[in-house]
Amino acid sequence: MAHPSDYLGKGGMIIIDENQGAVSAPSGKVFVAIQSTTTGGTFTVKGSGLYEYVAIDSADAATVVKYINPATGEAYADEAAADGVAAGYFEVNGDAKTVTVEIAAGQTVYGRFTEVDATDSNAAILYLARS
Image 1 (cartoon, rainbow, N blue to C red):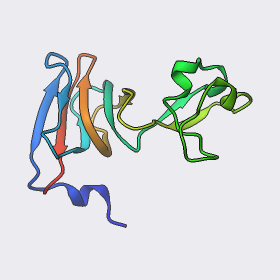
Image 2 (cartoon, helix red, strand yellow; image 1 turned 120 degrees about the vertical axis):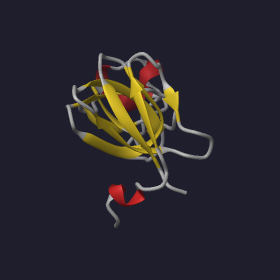
Image 3 (tube, rainbow, N blue to C red; image 1 turned 90 degrees about the horizontal axis):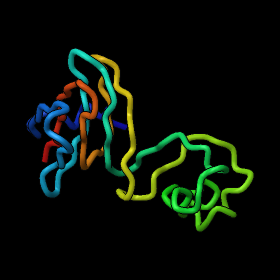
Image 4 (cartoon, helix red, strand yellow; image 1 turned 180 degrees about the vertical axis):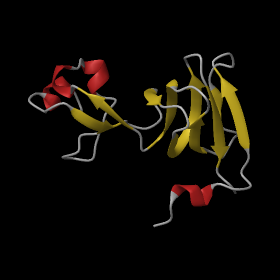
């Protein structure tokens, strides 16, 4: 399997900071990497294949349905389906939810992001997937 950085190249870059608000990838494209610049901080992202740490057993009904049940591969149907399930990393169901990510200064995070927002006093370089 190729390293995610193999998809970088002629896709282009966008530089963002906390003053711009959420930045969406152009139609039909995704950001494949987020590189925090001189200061780390909190970023919010949307995309596919995202995981988030959640105490699923104590989550409310509106929250539970936003995650994939690893036992079935389908979204949790309701709170009862998550009863007794230990806290852990769960896949987010589609692009429906924004996930918060802490990125250290100079760190690069790879993924398939459709939207990125720098929420602290930080900045990042967003790399678009090449066509």
